[in-house]
Length: 152
Image (cartoon, rainbow, N blue to C red; front, side, top):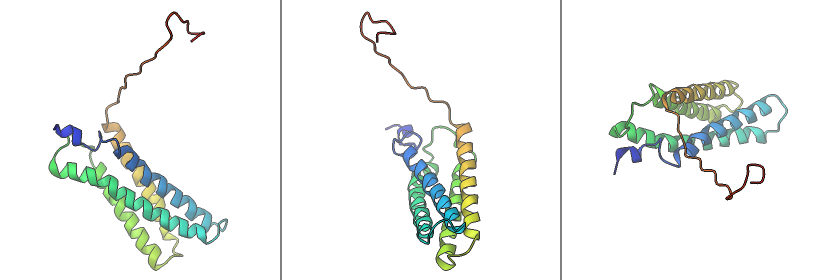
């Protein structure tokens, strides 16, 4: 089997796993802002904690194929400089954030750590975007026989 077939860029589940942590962590930051501003009840603090934890779990699942490819050298092309390392730093930041929340739930530094994590994750996504070649898909348009564009 071709090593490119095992690459995380070509795996159909990998893009879904990449978007889940970003969405969960973004919603966690939103829930934090609602709770800290006084517009939300204490349940928003719990929502922020658990969506952050769920984002951490999905981030680890998404990082696993990348780590395996990096260790085995299975990537067919040169990986983006620092993309995997930056993602691992973001995961470490959220682990630290969760530990801080477990010990001192009312600490305001955790909100800033969440904001920093989202910012670093955006930068990591930008590193990957400039490295990935544009993908061209075959688009097939079928029309009825002897039909014009207006009647199709």
